[in-house]
Amino acid sequence: MAAIYNFSMTSAPKVQASARVQPAAQPLVTALQLGQLLKAARRRRKLSQASVASRLGLSQNRISYLELHPDETSFKQLLAWCSVVGMELQLGERSALIDSDTKIEW
Image 1: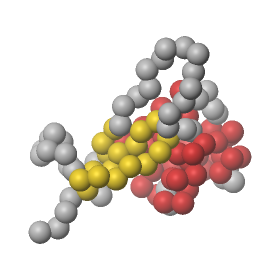
Image 2: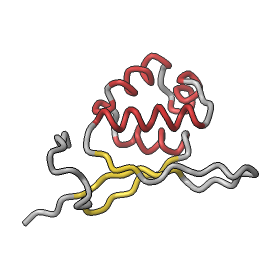
Image 3: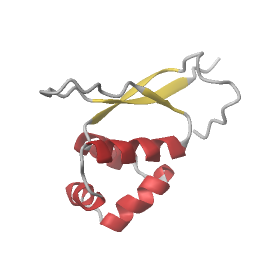
Image 4: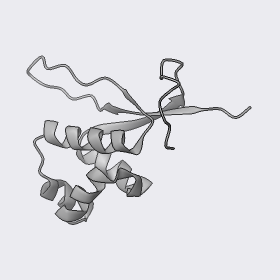
């Protein structure tokens, strides 16, 4: 029997003077969710698409496109992008809490 894995992203620890709560790990089962998480993390850091693009060696148009079509992001780009927006990737076995009716794209 093949193992099923859960791909989740969590915000990297960040020391802040304020008591703002960091977002919890977020399980991903669709490409659209990945795009939404990357965009939200960029906005939380108050980064423009252009500033993320320059750090990744891409154009602003490409960042905009990848936020809408994250399934076309390479793994190398994803790791670098996560670093820029203060996120990390974690892999683990799929939780039984994920709704079995959810369409899994990956």
